[in-house]
Length: 210
Ligand SMILES: Nc1ncnc2c1ncn2[C@@H]1O[C@H](COP(=O)(O)OP(=O)(O)O)[C@@H](O)[C@H]1O
Ligand SMILES: Cc1cn([C@H]2C[C@H](O)[C@@H](COP(=O)(O)O)O2)c(=O)[nH]c1=O
Image (tube, rainbow, N blue to C red; front, side):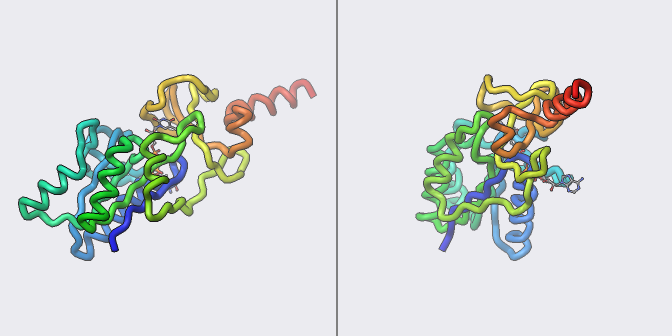
């Protein structure tokens, strides 16, 4: 039976690496698949992993209709056994429904990878629909860590190292890089808006003033 699986984790938890490994393993066994992504940091139509792999992919846009796209490929004789869908948090709820339909009506395995929540700890619409519809949700086993050493479960957006809570939901970026960047935190420190820089400053102040 084909499945819709949602592999989720914080930023920098190895999702794109696993997406590329999954594609590699299925392809190595003669199965035919397609890789999709939306808004990868490396640019349009790419899936890039911080471990160094960077491969071509099909860019998902507002106009992408997965059902129409795969039906048309199949009608013209192309085999499509599975889809690897990276940055799936950016897909629309309707696109996630199209993916679920491909599983149920065409027996195509869908491996979707993405973060669940944004910098304000709110679900992305695409991730919400994946959580509602997936046959299985796999939380990545590689632990990303908060600066305090606890397991990081949330993504913070930072400007010059300080956590911000206002802004657009979607701003493509990387952890620890750029003026606007991201940092993974445990819930306690996300709630306290305490990034690595804030913590360092606080401890410097404490040692200065006793
Ligand atoms: N220099 C490195 N050596 C070993 N592992 C690394 C290195 N840089 C990154 N990684 C691993 O890559 C992971 C990030 O992988 P990636 O697929 O880019 O994450 P995601 O797609 O979830 O944002 C990190 O959690 C870490 O385990
Ligand atoms: C928290 C959060 C993240 N993003 C963006 C930043 C990155 O471009 C991607 C996540 O990529 P990764 O492969 O999981 O590192 O999402 C965003 O647009 N808005 C947010 O709130």
